[in-house]
Length: 161
Image (tube, rainbow, N blue to C red; front, side, top):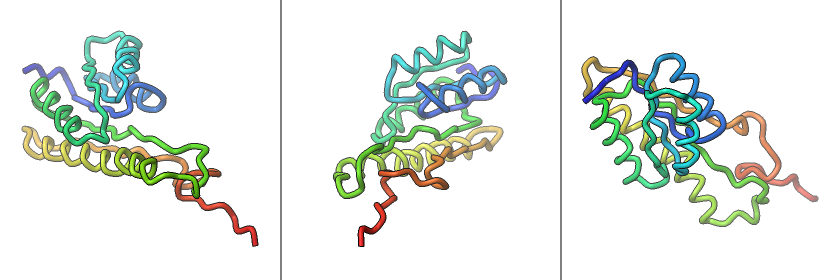
């Protein structure tokens, strides 16, 4: 079991903020475990890093068994975790509130809430058991929490009265 420096797990590492954060962490000396649904996008992130300090682990965080497998892989490979960047998220862009299906709502909750919770829980358990103990968990959220967007799930259309 090899432990090269600090170990960071980044969810949603295949694009956007997750990719940029993974690349910055690698540049700062971290080994980055790249998690996300699309293997090809994760491999692209790893190629951009031009570093052997990456591990690609395709993971759909809406599936609890895949989250467990991700953290088992981290534990088996490195024996520890120093940072979890909980970044994966989905939205239902462009769908008016009244047209949002239960399945669409459930998918957002499964990824953005339950998946993030389960990742944090697994990371916390590892951080508590490792020697030395500790680490950091960063939960990244959407700007929509502060600036509602038209047709975003929590926003209703104005009254037509």
